[in-house]
Length: 206
Ligand code: DC
Image (cartoon, rainbow, N blue to C red; front, side):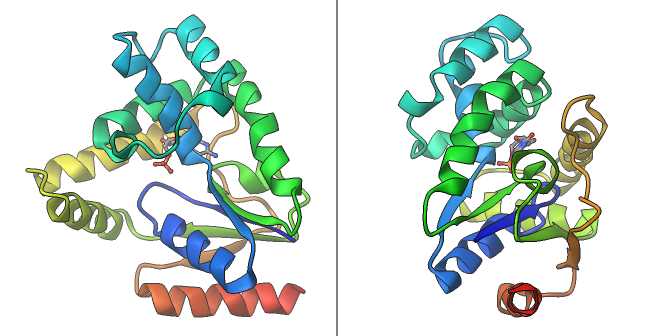
């Protein structure tokens, strides 16, 4: 079984996808981490994330890059990831890795931006998880504060709008709901309620 979970930044799709995977005994892949790993590799080697040659080279070595580095989760890495993700060759280099995970038994839950549209267009269930921008910014703000970072809510909101804009308007594999995806708005749902809603959709499709 393959479950695609797509949506904008800070919609709660990562936590939800991980919980869905645990619930159904499936593997879980956070595909954003792959783009983040490419972005971080460039930052750490002093290269510009918008350099296509360097980004493609980093993406080609994805199976040797660690996906455990805590620096993958910071805001600077997220921005670099969003830049490298607009490059078609980078996306191609990461595609096989994602499809290999998806087709390994017993199946997987993949979360990202283009899982239902490009990576796994034949996924058994597709969820498009979203929430209002101010709610997503508030969640991201609280996450960063909990990590001990000094942040400003207005800056987090502005950054989120920039990321949404870049992810949705890029020419290649833009963030968009697949026609056959279920829309799940988590603005008013906590994680347990969101999991409940997702399981009802998935069970209904099985
Ligand atoms: O979900 P995230 O914030 O970790 O993703 C980081 C960036 O990677 C995001 O700005 C867009 C990009 N991304 C993508 O283009 N396609 C995916 N399947 C996953 C992430």
